[in-house]
Length: 91
Image (cartoon, rainbow, N blue to C red):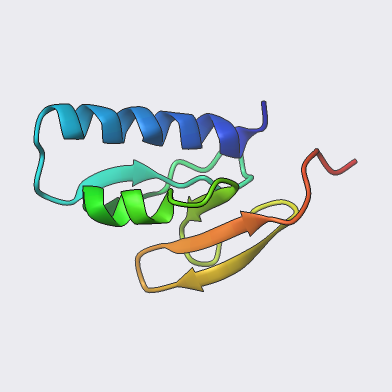
């Protein structure tokens, strides 16, 4: 499993717990970039997070960070939505 998938899974668990607790404030999520040493965070509401997760293969990263094999679809000052163009690791 690639690092971005590990952080994506962690974010899904964060969102699940926030929904279980009926959390309404913005929630801190982890950057899902390809840098395994990155522990950057950003805040989104559950609605924003759910909207970003509507399409599989999309990742949430901090603006200026990179997703290996991916492109930025949209971004604002808090977060960028990226999509992988191909699966697998670069060698």
